[in-house]
Length: 615
Image (cartoon, rainbow, N blue to C red; front, side, top):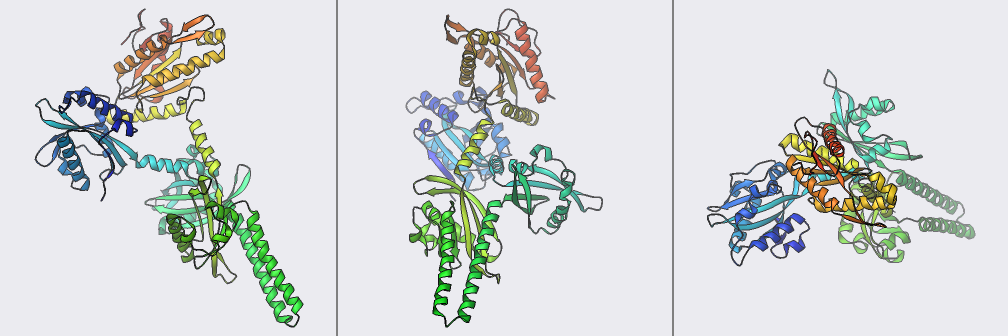
């Protein structure tokens, strides 16, 4: 199988997006002189504590490499520790790939950047690595490798859950004393499901279905049947959503010892199908009427011609109605040819109705779309599905990539025989872009562009979890602009906003990219989360930020003016939670204020004296 997705040996700092990899590559180039490799000491994990968790050190041996160092962050993501073990212990194509690339780097004496699939790691999809040859103290060539996950399955799954247009609920069965299922408890509820159920997802998680929705007890027997038999079930219900009655399809399947319920909005499809069914009924009735008139009035040529005219008018009515509906509509025959389509459907693919009617999917659509359509048609015709809805991007003619939701259904005659497949495409490009923008706005402060308080609290919870599980240190710095009210009173709120914006820009520029988290905590308060940093390191960064802000001059009508900020710093300690950690940080900040401002105070320290340095 193919392992490498990307492999670069030149211009890595210009072609790779990861700033840490670009920086390490430039450092290696600066330290390499001719054919002489950089010394191992420059990249020794013990000398690079902030990167050590993502570093590996490999020493060549007989046919394999030994892992002399295996970073804890790599081990945490991989679920195993290779320290002291050999690359040959990976008895797979990936292990052979590791050895081959390490050998190439040793022989060439040049760094190599690779991306490969994570065959051995269930939680990671792929890794990206910078492999660097260095010279050991004994003069031998060894490998130092910076290794980070590029894609995590949990993040992808969370993103899919969060972005899904369907409501998704995971239910946990609650069993009684006899082992039977008495009820179900909400285990996972995505945002779309919360909107459909008119509840906040967090308010549902952990509660019983019968307690939250007593009126839903009629669905519990269906859920129990699915749990017992493993056979999926579907049913429909109506609910009020944003002041409108909408129709939803509930699809219930068993997943291990859990139940997954998907709520799909089929309102528009149901309306379209009802309309198409009424049209089909009208056409069938018209045809039956014409046949009866033909039998009874065979001798009356004028009446026969009139009946033919009525049938043609009915056909024309359907054609005119399809053209009047402002969305792409289509109807495929059972033999796979296109029976009819409106101009909106033809325009999606840069065609006209005259050029596509009667054609097969392969003659109209891109190959991958035609294959997708054939597979979905087969499921409808087999009876495994009666209706379909899916969402995806389509490269349209003249309008670029657009996002559509497609509704399709198998049409039948009065004898319940399949006659064709009808459907509609709804363009949701603008709504999709708006939803993405709203998600961005919900996570950032509108004035400074920094993360808002909600995002910071989420990242702080993650840092505390890493401390509890792996003992990974973390520190928090809380800062407040000194005498900010007088700044607003003296120079106006626009000037005060500029001070906050420039301070935010300064903070972003001084911290580590993709490691530290900077957020606006409220008003003139900002907060910095520093993972992998102890209290001393947090104090050093806070002092550097304090001095940088104190040196920042602002132009005022009275000439350049400097302002100051006070800092409080606390490191995570045992039994800390979010509330206790922030309380200790806030207390340290106010000790800085009480001691005269423009200084840094660590949690638990006595108030600093006249000097500002406290670390």
